[in-house]
Amino acid sequence: MKFSLTFATLFIGTLNLIAQNFNVILQVNDQNINGEITNLYLSNNNQKTDEKIYANYYPGDLIVSNYDKEKFENLDEYFTLTFTYNTFKKGIQNLKTFNIKLQKKNLEQPYLIINVYDFRNRKYKKWFQYITKEDYLAQITFPNSGIYIRQK
Image (cartoon, rainbow, N blue to C red):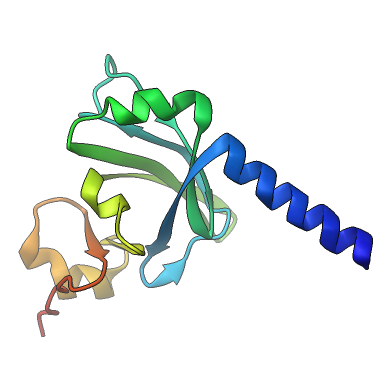
C-alpha cells in the first residue's frame, strides 16, 4: 500500500514538472467526458495551415506538455479548443468535432467548465437553438460567469 501511494505521488509530481495543467472540466450534454474524445488540440483560428498544440485531457485537467509551452504562450488572446467527440448508438460510431472559442484569461480562472450542448439531441436543440446557427452550443462557466437561458 505504501509503495502504491509513493508511486502515485511521484507520478503526479512528475506530471506537474513536464506539463502545464489547467483546471478544465469538459462536458457534452451535461455529462462529464471520460475518454470519449480524440484529436484534442489548441490553435489560433482552426485552419489547416495553423500550428496545432496537442493536449491531453483527464477529467478535471487539460494538460499542455512543456515542450509545447512556448507555442502555447504564442497563441493569440482568443484561440480555439478543438476536439472530436465519439459516441456509439445501436452499434454505430458517431463522431462530432467541436470548436470552442476561448480566451487565455479563461484558463487562468480557478476552474473552467465547458459544457457543449450537441443539437443532435433534440432536447438541447429545442432549448438552445435560438442562440446560435451552429449545430452545437458551448457554455463556458467560471467564477462569476453567466449561463444561457433555456427556451421553453
